[in-house]
Amino acid sequence: MSCITHNTLPNCTTQLSNLCKTVVSAVKWLAEKIVKIVKLIFILIGAAVLLPLIVLYKLLCARPSYPSAIPVPIVTRNPFNNDQASGHHFRNIFGGFSVSAPSTENASIRIGDFPQTPFQSLTVNHDRLRDTPPAFDPSTIYRVVEETRPRILTSELLTIFDNIFSSTHSQATLFTDDGGYQITKASARRSIETSYLDWINQYTRSLYQNDSDRDTRLANSMKNYLLGTIFELRKGDIPLDKKKEVLLNLAAASFHCPPRRHEQAQKAYFTLCNQIETLDDILLKYIQQTKEDLIIQHYSLSTEPVMTLNFIRKKVGSELGLDCNPVNLEDQYIHLHDARSPDNQYNKHTSRQDFLKVFSSIFKAENIINIMKEFLNNRITQDNAFAAELSQYIDNAIRAHVQAGHLNQADADELPEPYQDPNTYHLTDAGVKFLLVENRFLNHAQRNGHLVTSSS
Image (tube, rainbow, N blue to C red; front, side, top):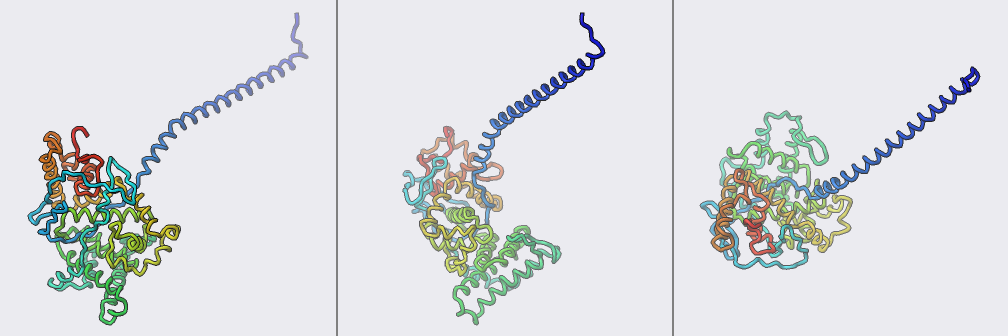
């Protein structure tokens, strides 16, 4: 029988201690391996779950965002000049947009220089691509202003500015400009005075009439729009916030080139005034603005869009229905468009075909509906009369389609809720599509396919 002696006890203790250490080390190693395996499993599971979500998120974010609705010019047309032969809708002087009978034939779809990419079976109607809203002559403003008493002078713009911003301290920041600089009330007022009033006076005096016909025409046009703006600012029924917005936009543009200032003066006048206009005119103006906004957004023309846009207008404006006002095409700063372009991209594509190719890639039915929806709903929010008359137009158009046999009464009874929100009158995507197809800006692959029915 063996026994443990005093000599062997230390050895046993040492061996036992070593064994324990080995076991502990093995357990730690095994635990570390298990933890790593578990982490790897979680990573793989997370990747399997998150990767599709990331792809889906990027796909959703790929849809372009669009700028807020920009006030655009409203033009005057004789309300008795009803061009029904061309299928145009008109607004009569007793209120409401009239509806011509629906055509029994589909609007022709012509394959032109641009690919036809459908959005909900929609394509751009290139027969209307060159159509532009009726031209507006700013000298007509001057004739109205001349009869106004007390007489309107451009210097009154500063008086109105002082009155509207009377509660604002002269060194208080009114806005931040494109370069990130804070513009105070005092500097904004001074810039309006020098960039608008002094510049206009310089080029409209008889002494300077022969120095530069181009600058004189620009100055006279700008002066007329400012006089018209002052005429509207005198009115007490225009909300104060709207007046502030117009003056701040004028101040912001005053730090830029004369064509940019002219364009803002034009927008200021048309933002404030109310003119009799046809539905076709309204849609044409917004379609034109949509085209130009898509171009500005595509080329990221955030700070100096006017000179580059004028360059494109001069190249392809007549083909694409852009704003080809002579004042825009005579822009003396057009040659600077290369230096102002992001990454100097324009020296890579400045030909007519290059611009047409870019336009064909952005002027798609989906983009048109998205931007037009924003323009029209903004107009509906600001103009109750327009909202009511547009609703009446849709009702009349639905009734005309029922009479033509395109809709049954059961489907018609459900309308126009799919087209308009019954509370706000805001148009839905289907409502915008309805308007654009009815007015032949878009074509639908199926006859009357733009109509909402119980089977659609």
